Amino acid sequence: MELVTSEVGLKMESGTRRNPTLICAPLMADTVDQMLSLMQKAKLSGADLVEIRLDWLKSFNPRTDITNLIKHCPLPTLFTYRPIWEGGQYAGDEKSRLDALRLAMELGADHIDVELKAIDEFNDSVHGYRPAKCKVIVSSHNYHNTPSSEDLGNLVARIQASGADIVKIATTALDITDVSRVFQITVHSQVRGVPIIAMVMGERGLMSRVLCPKFGGYLTFGTLDSGKVSAPGQPTIEDLLNLYSFRQLGPDTKIYGVIGKPVSHSKSPKLYNEAFKSVGFNGVYIHLLVDDVGKFFETYSSTDFAGFSCTIPHKEDALKCCDEVDPVAKSIGAVNCLVRRPTDGKLFGCNTDHVGAITAIEDGLRGSRHFSESPLAGKLFVVIGAGGAGKALAYGAKEKGARVVIANRTYERAREIADTVGGQALSLSDLDTFHPENGMILANTTSIGMQPKVNETPISKEALKHYALVFDAVYTPKITRLLGEALETGAKIVTGIEMFIGQAYEQYERFTGLPAPKELFRKIAA
Image (cartoon, rainbow, N blue to C red; front, side, top):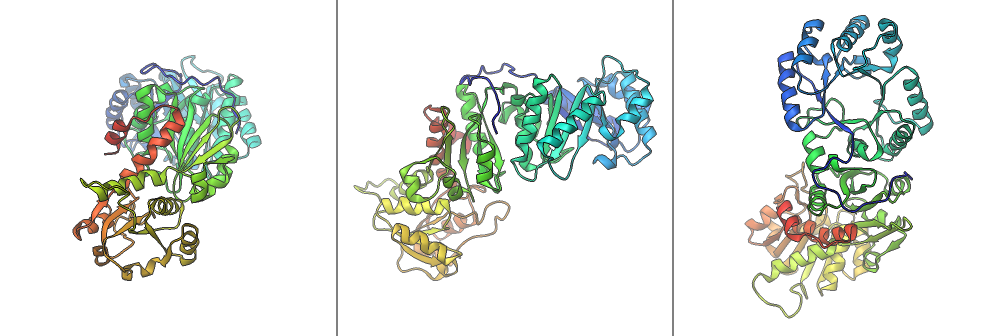
């Protein structure tokens, strides 16, 4: 995806607003009084306007209620009366619905939203009369997919031809690459001077909501509370303002993110965005739910998409997408960090997984004692998992002189890695009975035990008594069932937070060219 933006500026002025894109808080409540209360909350949260969802009201007296809502609203208003056939709650007759929207316009609403399917009937009903104050948003919602670029272009043209002051399209992401077509139509509309609200619904469409200031969107929707959304995938206003620094995003802002599936659990956006903010670095870091990593990099090939952390299950496939790979990552066969070179757009991949984890494990073994060599030297080091992180830890442990054993659900996969690093292979089902010696090291690199499946563990508590130290790459929760049971058997533990922070240091430096703020990272991740 090639998008034209101005030259990158690495510094952002803290606190200044760098874009005109608005944040709209959708208000969904049973009563007018509840909506009036939510309006105050929206004002305090930092919203620029509110969307009043009339279709959510349990009882509705159009003239009285609309007058009351407009009179007491501390923010500009957008009135929506969404019918069931367009994803809303209203099931009554169409004339009453359109009459209410016309009334809102006449009584002083700042915006009204009329569906494309209903705009001709609405236009006929107003006989050409439109108050100058009120902007008419003509909207189209597709809850099934995101159409082709050509079809999106035709849709926007139809909406514009209907007399819309502002175009609104909302589509559904079946793949994160669908968002690129909506970005393109947003940029194209902006160039032609057409105000547009363009959103892609669902978790795969998150970046359409966060990045619309970069590409010129008129507004984005942000919720007052997590989970109370008017459409799938809406972030909270708090996250837009504080996590993503929405007001500071501009055409020259560089995009970074964590690629994975699942990915919403990752703390990386909080870590990197806080660090970016602390030094005024003009970048934003987001969750990227990716199904096909090759397709993702092929689609988002612009240098605007500047750097990526890579997590389960894409670390090996991501390596194949790189134009250049660090020798260590090549030996491991996986990357967890990709940086796009600004000069030619080439992707460079490296692996920082093993550095953070192995250092933390060594520190855990050392305690206050001093070793002339690595405390891993000669130790039996059992790695659970044969993915990218498993490969990285096996490589790192071998480099430190440990004897490596790979345990995996699929024995053949474990055998492949064991042969590569010169170790032993086990089926995961045999791990409970594998204890050739005491004082072993155990490292879980799978997602077993990660939220929401916090009661799962890869090994029995009884078997843990043979281990001196247990490490778990999972960090949500911080103390997994595996680590909790390891503590109970007397083993030392190292949490996934240690690996998470350790691998992030180098990634941050590669992303920004600046030294990592290590104290800040530790404070955020704690």
